[in-house]
Image (tube, rainbow, N blue to C red; front, side, top):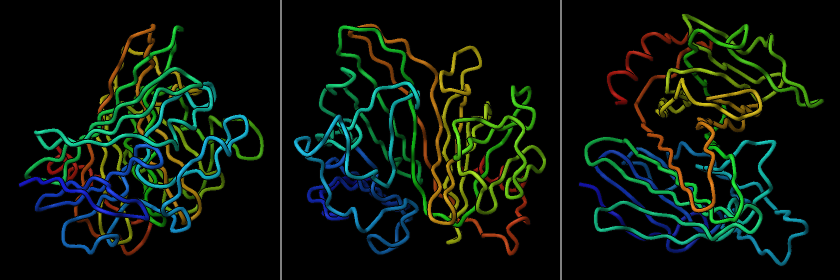
Length: 318
């Protein structure tokens, strides 16, 4: 049975908690519309959370009066969603860290809604539906263009999970990238299309990030429609999402998937949606599904059986 309640969490009052016999989800609307907790049922509140939260940010809220040129004081952690493309869309702190509204429908679906963003004229709605009989959480973001200009935008998921694990992305062919992925350089604005990083390994067509990267951001044009992250706590976090072979992906390198793995502190798990050309009054939605599966962390970081893991994902994260 799925239930929805109001709880205090991470320094915020009146968050929405969705829970069934398998998993607990906490949604926050005070600093952007975020997932604050995603944890297997049975763990104490705040324990077992696969999402990374910074204790120093607990309870923080944005005051637009304190901002200069749209600046913001923090980059919030947690289960974040956003709009892109990253290097083109105007800064939008009102969407990213502003206050949203939160409600629960009669069907138990939770809804977080932003204000209309002054910078872009966009309003975002995020709906969260928890399955009754599994850990599946469906996250649907709707981008609504309420400006008087046409925008070309995309869904950009920016979920921060606890670092130190192993990220897994199935690569597909054909790919526009010689190695199936690219690596963004942090020292200058370049993208390496033939990277060689000792902590990126490809086995049987599955890319794995097994340790700290030379540069934290990777991008792929995978059409597999899923990615995963194995935590050292023996929990596998899986995301599924649609990929459209006949659509334009307008991220700077045409990515469908990205990872940002910062040392052993954080990993950002990022499905991306295709370009949506939104005339005034238009809206477009993109949905991703999340799962948690018990899965033993390997004794050696380079010893993960990726084909067995992929088979497990195919069986149990559907």
